[in-house]
Image 1 (cartoon, one colour):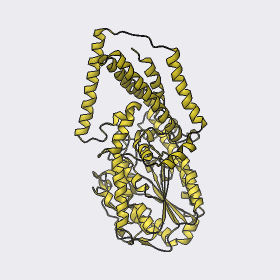
Image 2: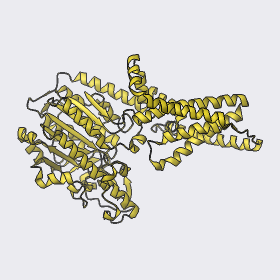
Image 3: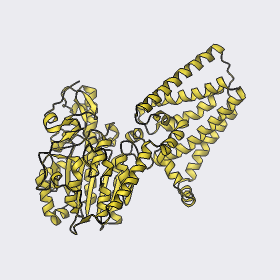
Image 4: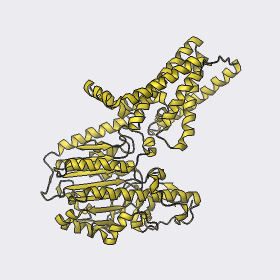
Amino acid sequence: MQCDSFIFWNYFSYFYDSIPWFLEKLTKSLFSTILLELLCLHLAFLLFPSNLARTLLLLLVGLSAIALIVEGFLLYSYRSLITPYVLDAILQTNFKEAREFFIAFLNLKIFLIALGFLLAGYGYFKFFPTPQTTLSPRLIGIFFALYVLLSVIFIADVANRYFKHKPEPFAKLNENSLTRLFYSIRQYYGSTSFYTSYKQLVSNYQALRESYQGKISKSSDSPQHIVLVIGESTQRNFLEVYGYELPNTPFLRSFANNEGGGQLALFSDTIASFAQTKLALQHLLNFSNAGDSQWNQSLDLINLFSLAGYKTAVFSNQEVVGSEVNAFSSIASLADYKANLNKFITSSRIAESQITYDGFLLPFIQSALEQNPTESRLDIIHLMGTHFNYDKRYPKEFAKFNANDIHYPSFADKKQKEIIATYANAILYNDYILNEIFKIYAKSDSIIFYLSDHGESLYEYKGKLGHFVTSRFTAEVPFLALMSEEFIQKHKETAQKIQSAKDKPFVIDDLIHLLCDVAQIQVQDYNATKNPLSAEFNAKKIRIFNQKADYDKELKGEIAQPK
């Protein structure tokens, strides 16, 4: 069978497909890639005359070569494969923009790399002729039966996911370069895909903006810079500043020791609303309440501050579009200034394992501030934070702790302690990022709020690692305010209210009400009973976590336990 030439190209396909994923994903990716290639090759030679089969083979080789060049360029330039967002960028580009793009990016280096791959492929065909192989009828029958079985399993899996309304039933098509384009096209034009959902959310928020025109105002004495830093998967009990045994928050500790002169307000009793990024962000960034099915009908932070007279900026180190981040990315699209380290990534699987650190956002934040240092602005910074795999969240110089430093939970074995140590290191780097962000805004009238979308169980909840469970450990998140000296001087009353509120019970889905108070914004949706800075705050509010449990009655006293 003439299959060597096709597999030659797809070894390259496998290589660049695997770049964005963790090394432990390699075996699975290799298996799925080769399986599809063999299926295509064998079926072609089993079902069609040899001349037609060879034609199909050459067609597949050509498609593989094109995919290699296109996706190789995307990986080299944007760390992305073909995604719906890439298709959108192409379809929205006019001739002038396309010309400028080719001039800017298709340099001599890119051209020589592409030419090198093409010459290598040509040389392979020219100097290594493929040997002829004849299969026995029995072996042909075995192959055919095997592929029929695999096809039935694949179709049954897709049908099961489709009819049970599970997310992305055709997602397996995204795992191979030969089918990824078709999957992305389906995502782009499909009526139920996450990309369609993203576009609908953007359109909805644009309409909301129109309905609030002229209905929002702010005080002339509002702070100049309000910054919201959203972390990821960070449980507050693993921060030294919250009592953890390891010194992994030296920057925050220095402020907590009053070296910052009252510039830090550390909220001690704050919980997330959900143990999942998707659900938490749906309610964190607008006036909706946790559990509202029509959460996207509520006014969002970007529109709120923009209509109040603030400029808005969003800096993100997570994927642009995806089922987990659509609530965030749809709002972010409305900002005046946007910077995303993963410009075309629309897959959580890629984003979770990409190697860009949160520190790469810092120059964009610094540059945006320097361009317009005097304008009033809301900045939202979305970090990868301490998301699993934790050891991919920080550079090697922050690998300070190891398994020998871990004593909690007491029942954790050595391997588990090694993983917990990487979590402690990720928090150490996260503390560094907060320090660098504070330095950027420290000399202006600024206040920085930091929180995490949800917590994380470090084997504490029935021996489980991760979130998605209803537990104290996935509910309890850090929430703090860092105030510049100028902010404290200009807004003494607000600074005092923040310090007085730091021990009040709070849920992060009410954050927008607190921000209205700090920014002195007047809007009809504001509710003083949800704002811990207000004298009307309802400290007896029942805090339901994950829409399943009363945190104060059922979860707050939970202790770590093995499986």
